[in-house]
Amino acid sequence: MLQDFNLLSNIDGEYDSCIVGTGPAGMTLALKLAASGEKVLLLEAGGLSYSDRSQELYDCESVGHDAWPKYTRLRYFGGTSNHWSGRCRPFEKSDFYDRSINGLPGWPIRYGEIEPYLPEAMTILDLDPDAGFKPINKPSLEDHFYPDAFAQSPPTRFQAKYIDQITASENIHCFFNATAVDIKLDQSHQAVTHIQVANYNGLSTPVKAGTFILCLGGLETPRFMLNCNKQIKSGIGNRTDMVGRCFMEHLNVPMGSFLYREPEAFTKLQFFTDDQFCQSSSIGKSNITMSIVSSVKSYGRTKAIKTFFKNLACQMQIEDKVQFISDFKCPGMGTIGTLIEQAPNLDSRVSLGDTTDSFGLLKAQLNWQIGAYDQNTIRQAALTMAKEFSNAGLGQIRLADFILNPEQEIKFGHHAHHMGTTRMSDDPKYGVVDRNSKVHGLDNLYIAGSSVFSTGGACNPTMPIIQLCLRLADHLKA
Ligand SMILES: Cc1cc2nc3c(=O)[nH]c(=O)nc-3n(C[C@H](O)[C@H](O)[C@H](O)COP(=O)(O)OP(=O)(O)OC[C@H]3O[C@@H](n4cnc5c(N)ncnc54)[C@H](O)[C@@H]3O)c2cc1C
Image (tube, rainbow, N blue to C red; front, side, top):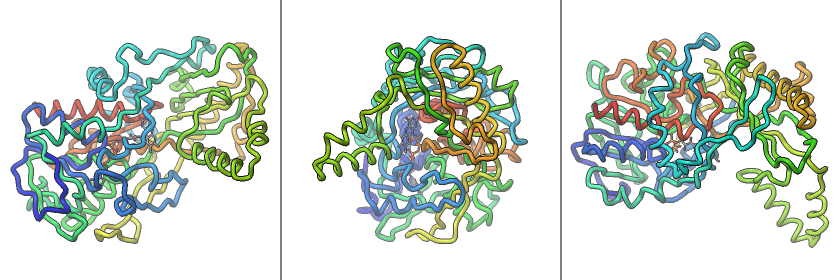
C-alpha cells in the first residue's frame, strides 16, 4: 500500500518494523522483511518526484572540504538512486581484516558475513551475473597493482523498479511526504517506543513498531539522531559522542595525465592496489582508472559544463571552431581518475549547525577533513603507479605538482559516497552500531546504509549497502 501522508490525519497500524527512508537501503529491507511475512511501515520524507521544498531540507553547511552535501543526495521516493551512476564493485576480503587506523578499529565482522549476499544484491541492481567483476585489461604492473574491474548497473532506479510492488503489497504500508522528526524512548532509555512523523501541513503523529530501522543516508542519519535530543541532550545513540564522527568519502584526486606508448592497444586501463603494498606501506586502497580523453564519459557536473559550452557555441554560431579546439589532443593522451580509500578520522564529522529547517530541526554542518594517513595514501599510490606504468612499457605518466611537492596542498574531490558517520564497532567507544547494525545501548533501533561502514575500502558503496541490508534482514527474522 502506498499513501500520501499530506492527505491523512494519522498512521495507526500494528507493525513489526518501521523503516525510515526509501533509498536502496530502506527499500531492500522493506521488501525482504515483507517477503518473510512481517508487517512493515515504510516512511519517506519526500514525495514521488523531486521538489525544491523537500530538497531544501537537505540544506547543509560545509565548513571543511566541500563535499556538496545538498546536491549529492536526493530527498524523495527512491532516494539517491534516482540519480546514482550505477558503478558497482564488492569489498575485498582484506577490507575486513583486523586493523587499527588513526587509533580506530576496523570492521568487527569478516567479509564472509556479507559475501553470501552478493548474488542477490547483484540481482537487485540488475547486474549481469555472468559479467562478474572481470578485469577490463590484463597488463600487470610489477607487484603493487593488479588489473581491476567494476560492473555497471543500468543504473537501477529503485522507485521505477519497485513502486508497483510496494503499492500492491499487503505487508508494506508506505507513506510518502512523511518526515521522521523525533524518536521517543521508554522511561529507562533502553528502547524506542515510537517515532514522531510530520507532514508538510503541520500534522505530527507518533508511529509504533517492534523494531525501528533508520535508512536516511550517511549525512541525514547522524543529523536525525543528533536532533532527537529531548530526552538525552547529546542525541540518540550518542553516549560516547560518536554519532556523526568519522565521515569518510572516496577521494577523487586529479593526480596527473598520461600518454600511452601504443594508443591503439587500450582506451581504458584500470588498476587496484595490492594488499601487500597497502599493508607494508600503511596506506589505504586505491582504484586508478586511465582513460583516453575521447572515451571519457561526462555526467553530473562535467556534463553540465559540456552542455553549457555546447549551447554557448551554438548561440554564437562558432560550433565548428569549438569542436575543432575541443577535439584536439595528442594520440594516446588520457586522464587519470581515482577512487581512493579515506581512513576513519574523528575530526571529519557531521554535527548540528545553528539554523533550523521548516520542521524546527537543526540543519547539518559537515566538516570533511582528510589527514596525514590519507595524504600518504595519495602520494604513495601516485608515485608507485607512475613508476610501474613506465617500467611496464605502457607509456608515461605526468604527475601533478602537488603529488611531487609535499609542501603543496593536495587537490581532491568527492564521489558522493557518504560513509562512516554511525560506524560499526563491537566497542561503543569506537562506534555507534554493533556487529548486527543495532545501535549500542538500545534494544530495538537499527541503522542501515553506508553510515555503518567501519572503513570504506576503494569500492562503490551501494552494492555493499545492499549486501549488509540483506544480512540485517536475515538477522531480524532469526
Ligand atoms: C551523482 C551520484 C552518483 C552516484 N554514483 C554511484 C555509483 O556509481 N555507485 C555507487 O555505489 N554509489 C553511487 N552513488 C551513491 C549512492 O547513490 C548511495 O550509496 C545510495 O543511494 C545510498 O542509499 P541509501 O538508501 O543508504 O540512501 P539514500 O539513497 O540517500 O536514501 C535515503 C532516503 O531517506 C529519505 N529521508 C531522509 N530524511 C528522512 C526523514 N527524516 N524521514 C523520512 N525519510 C527521510 C530520503 O528522502 C531518501 O529517500 C552516487 C551518488 C550520487 C549523488
